[in-house]
Image (cartoon, rainbow, N blue to C red; front, side):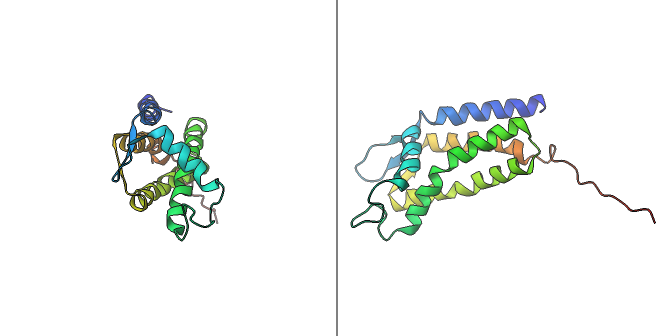
Length: 154
């Protein structure tokens, strides 16, 4: 990994970790803003809680909201695996697949914001920026192995 790329990854990881201590979401209702670590914990644990689809459950008749919370909860673990693979094998297909999966899950946070009357705050923006800096290393064309074309001599 080149020095320039390594510094982007370091800055990205610093932003990612720091975002958990900033306010990640605000509430349009009477609730107070929540820090990133609380949002991450809730998104990871809430879909697996008791009375998931029971009467008057949080996700009753809201499959898209449930899917949004479920996938939002898996963003951080998927990103951490992708970041680990960036250090181990930055050009591996697995790294690119995890990076793409992580980026594809981010819009599901916005579905949750919509359903539960929340809006993103500075922590959410810093969180995404940190992930983008790290994942850009996984998706960078400079580190992808060139396709080898073999010619058969006739």
